[in-house]
Amino acid sequence: MRYQFWRDAIASAFAFAPAKQPVAVLLSSVLASLRQQQQQQQQHKPGSNIKPPLSKSWFLRIISAREKYSTNAPYPTLASLEQYAENTYSALLYLTLSAMPLHSVTADHIASHVGKAIGIVAVLRGVPLLAFPPPPNHHRNPSGLGGTLDAQRTQQGAVTLPLDIMAETGLKEEDVLRHGAEAAGLKDAVFKVATRASDHLITARQMVKNVQEGADVGHAFEHEGDEGHHYHSHPPEAQPEEGGGGPGSIKDKSAQQRAEVEKAFGVFMPAVSTELWLRRLEKTDFDIFAEDLRRRDWRLPWKAWLAYRRRMF
Image (tube, rainbow, N blue to C red):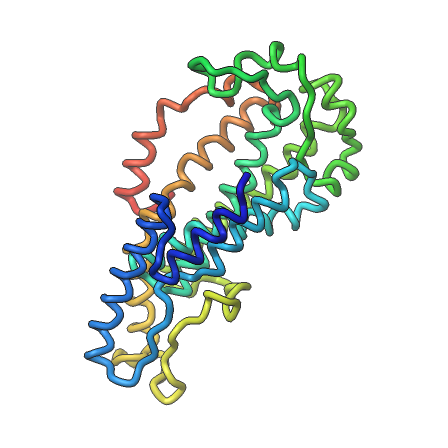
């Protein structure tokens, strides 16, 4: 892929001199619109600094992460898979929130966990396809993955599960490429990786519940203070005791967090399809090659509507 092409396109968009390419032109237009909103807000707050409305580093982080694993190299550890998900799927959610615009440590914190879950599940879903890549096919393919798995086994690819998990469960890449779903240790490895994705969804769900109930989210945001994750906070003198109700009080902060999560909830909605897929995986006893996992879930529209209505995924 032309990774340098995309780096140049991003750079041109942020310089407000976009390359003649649709994505760069549209991105530059969005940046200009957001910047205009910032300038209008600055008129009401003289002396405030205007920062880039979207973080350029997040775009570049996505490109670099994709480039690093473009050869389908295995992830050294489960933590490195989480970092990949953070730098890609979570970063996309951060950018979406920023474009709303919404700059909130609470929303970003929830988005981080949701993005990690989405990214881990995306890698799991790709295991059969990358292990047995389909032959080139220029015709319409209803399955989306190149026909049946038996047909795909004429070619062999790579196994992208974390190496530390494979070692822990005794799973060997050669066994997966030879025996597919029957490889010793495969279900155990998939279970451990899927559990980490589920943990992130559970954490994000509990955070949303805590905010809705006026409680603290439960733990600090590990990326707060990193590039793109600097947030405005009330000065110490504006923090009255817990019983207060004026600006800067605990009650005021809780109300602000609820409003931020309410505004951001649509960005968290990919968690719904991710949760549904994990449940289907569990029903197959963590058989990553099960044909049922390759079918569309007819419940998704209903589940998505219900989750959005209840503001809980």
